[in-house]
Image 1 (spheres, rainbow, N blue to C red):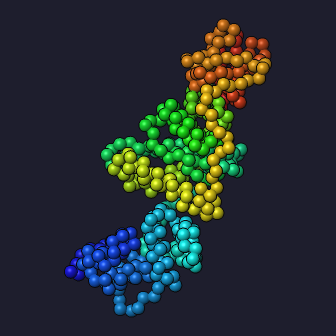
Image 2: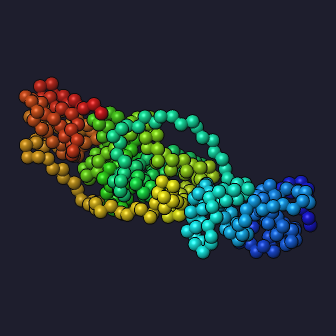
Image 3: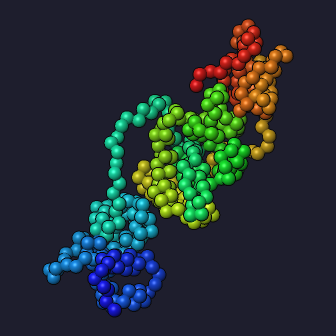
Length: 387
């Protein structure tokens, strides 16, 4: 039977979108919607020529096509956009050209016009730009594995009301997402275990950039060292911590989190396992299919290679110059110097520190490559350097 007048535009829209999304044969799809194949082809052609506007009732005057692109190419453009709704025309065009080298590639403006006419371009509001106040000597990655960035994506709930909060790690140079996985919790041991697996797979970076939140940092410890970041230092990985309350200084990582929120969080899966599976697919697409303008429309996998710095899981022993006094930090975070017990930091518990003589009864306290402060034997106190 023919479509009823009520909701006719919604039915036509649903029909043409299913033409591109569904694997159901066209004839069966027309039968399902109660229309003839001739009518079905008519609405498909109008959609390709004029977008969603073409699905409404029109005058008898012949309509002109907005472009000279063939129907098969139009179908491929629309299908690719439907498969990646969050991608803009430039990314769609780059992937289209890579997937169909035999087709003469339409211009970017043609892609934009076709997708806009099809009602598939979502316009986002942009805030007025302000000066970010970046620190001037910030390290910019010039090669893979020079800088990794890490953070927890803000949590959301799955359909069964479980909390889903993935840990994300990203190579700053190639934009390759190394890890995007929800952990049982954000405790130090849990996160360290995740990094052990990652280091075994990808090798060690030169620098890890993080914010000041736990477990990456501890505001009460010298230089903000936490147990996790102390372990990174012991492995030979330097730290790059952004200033407090300045997520904009890790902006590329935050942008990746916005993409996750836009494409996954707003349409949460039913269970934790289903949500992780969806995130795995999204990460693979991001790394191997999604072109980036800053990479010359290459994908991250085109640039990323594992680090040549291999991770050894054996117990670490820190070495200091011969003139340093070596002292072991106890479980409570204290060291003993000349029979004096001096609290330093629980973040360093289990590690050795080095004491360098600086003046009468005063020593500089070093951990790995960092001078953390000064030990005064006269006052029996440790004074941390100002971060």
